[in-house]
Amino acid sequence: MRMSVLVKMYKKKDVVVVGGGTAGVVAALAARRTGAEVLLIEKTHCLGGMMTGGLVVTPNQFRSRTPGHPLVVRGIPLEIFRRVLQAEGTHPGDGEGPVADDHGHMTDPIIVAQILDEMMEEAGIEVLFETVAFDVIREKNAIKGVVIANKSGGQVVLADVVVDATGDADVAAAAGARFMFGRKEDGRIHGGSMLMVVGGVDLKKYMEYLRSDEGISEEEKRWIEDMRRHLECVPSLVDFGSAPVGALRCPPVRLLPFGSPQGSS
Image 1: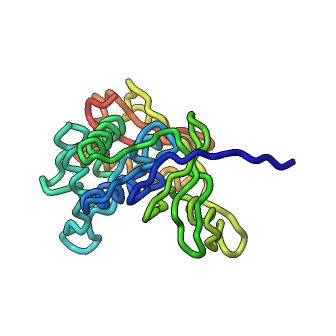
Image 2 (image 1 turned 90 degrees about the horizontal axis):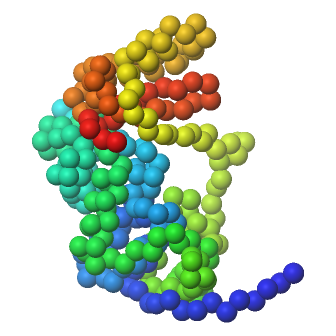
Image 3 (image 1 turned 180 degrees about the vertical axis):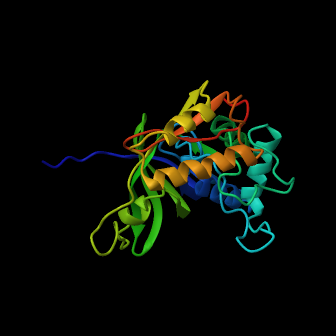
């Protein structure tokens, strides 16, 4: 069965960024600051990608692994971090940026999403939520726009530049670019996981319970011990005894805890 649909023109922009995760947000801001008219397309209901909707709340890799852990990521990412800090959505670390340890900084995903919305509005970037780009407009080897779908139906957005920040290379794949799915030898991909937020958890007692489980693996024992040290020593994680919130990681068999910013909900 073949079906033809008349797709209407939405608008023309200088730059269209597809994907409103951390990469897409930074790309949109960078383009806008050059004077370009920018449209940001996001398939979910909020910006920030895994850092907000995915509850991956650690702003990792801002610092080098070399001695002294100098800050090596600056620019717009550091600007976003400092805006979140001003809104009390994370902890100050050393006053310059996130601490070197991957688990040393936790952010409040709700505050991060709010800050990103504010920055889009301040910059004059148009955002389409709940919108999927499912095809491209091509002229020879150049991409001239994308075909989108949302509550208003199918539409075409033309652009001088299209940035693929989907995380899955959706735009590149739709344009016919070659890509690899999974490992070369067997096609296996990274396993999925689920994060959730639970309040009122005594993390100290819970970790004591996990450590007493005779069926726990050596790998899980090492992971729990590592998190115990973080929770005791890193000031940006909640204290064991008074933890109002614990973000719990869910492997197949049991729940393993992360910390979260003090006072978040």
